[in-house]
Length: 351
Image 1 (cartoon, rainbow, N blue to C red):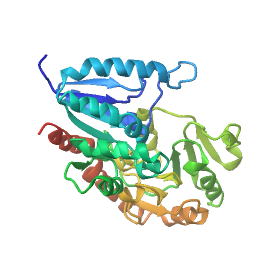
Image 2: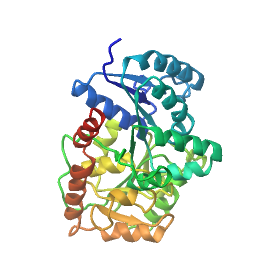
Image 3: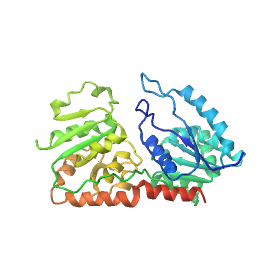
Image 4: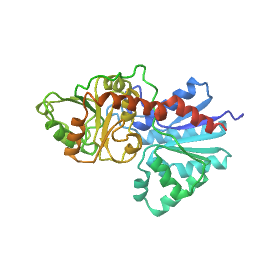
């Protein structure tokens, strides 16, 4: 059979049940949509096809069987395999699958999602760690989401020119948010859990003047918030919404707040906010300082620091708000607009 091009391996959102809309799945869909728009011939093997319709949780056995069968059937077709994995897939799937692809004479590419690979490797055995390092050394090309992740990877496998930056990206919004007078409309969009900073955010909001508004969007992950009395805290909670709805809703607010203590990569909701010209107040953790410079696109705060959150919010006013908006939108256009980034990645893949 004639070799025709790219075999893409990775996760996609489940649109039938409107679930599995996470950072990796949204990015995977973005890249696949781009390939289709450009007429790039490719095949896709989905790693998360099946979910339980009652619980909306993945079905591991069914997904494993589907993946193995379709990967084996599609591999002879291509000359390049692009694996798209998070930490777990990179450690537990990539070494074996990349070896199979290499033996069949395929070019092997890894796209690694997220920004916590160094932390994840500390939790695995030395044998598994060495196995994945060997696989990374043998890969023909590697894409990492964060610059800190690239620096860590180079410390493991050497300073090689096969490693490239592939940040979290989004399509340009149909309509950007025009800078206007700051009105105190605040929004949080993420999982409802203390690791995402919900507890400290609620305490900070209680210290703000009554003219501020806070709306919280997201699925509840911590049990303590299952029967939480949001109204008594002057906060509105809206359950999880789709990625498409999130962008529309986000445009209604003045500031995005994400006081997470988790070592994020490049949170998609921050990229969404930048695409609309909406400033961000977020924690100085993980890859966030790589995309938000305090005082430019928004403000950085220390994790679990209520006083820092309050001070940051109160520092935004009618005078400095338009500049924050302009800087946010400019940063998106320069670094996180998907058309430019995907063009660059595709040119690397097909050389």
